[in-house]
Length: 292
Image (tube, rainbow, N blue to C red; front, side, top):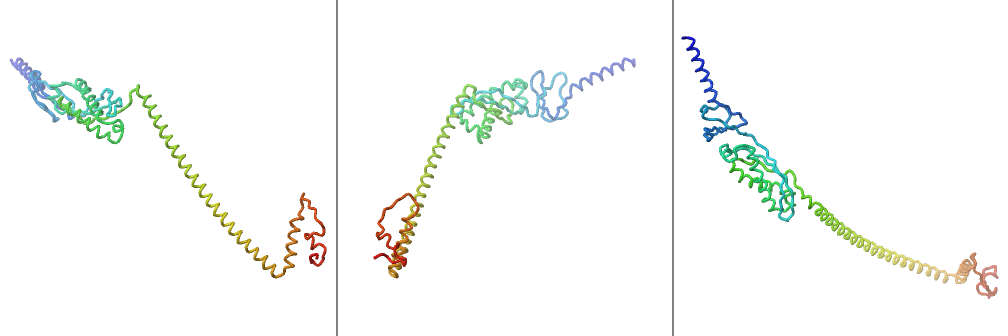
């Protein structure tokens, strides 16, 4: 009898243990849970710790509480300036509403599949309102906020909150790369031609100014030299005039000596003069008196 009672008690303890084990579940701090009863949501648990549920009737589906990454497939978009560009973006999200998440997408795989067209559509809409240079400039942060807002509007319907959206890479389509390269090369060539033309124009102006200044300097120098030469000639004539007035005969003698020095220099010139010429008037008198 005692043995049967012990067996029954053991069975009861096992059953109670199974019931107790099936009534308790723990939620990790990186998780959140949704309690289901026959597949229907009963309650959500977003705080970590020990929780209770009805055994055999209710089960628990755990979901990530941490921020998750989503790498969107590359998409081709058209900017406001009609330039095509291939954009590769990624997003970070978290499950904000476990109940809505379970009702709409049920799991992460389905959620990522649903997010792909949402992200790509938002990228096309946002890029279509800006020019390519704006997307590649300092206004890129503002564009990312706009894309995040567009994605978040649709993602919240799935119980998902978009934390951030970023563009990893933005390239021109392969078919347009050569055309854009040719356009850029032509533009750079045009700019180079303009710069060379401006340089040539400035060179001509500098050369003209230098020539004008040179001409002015030469004219001023020639004018100054002529003035100095004129003053020198005037002073020389004055000296000669004074010397002539002091001693006319000495002055005539001095002028004759100058004429001799000039005429009798070594050279190939031959002069035929008469000995009685006035040119040799001082040659026949040792006292230096001219011939009479």
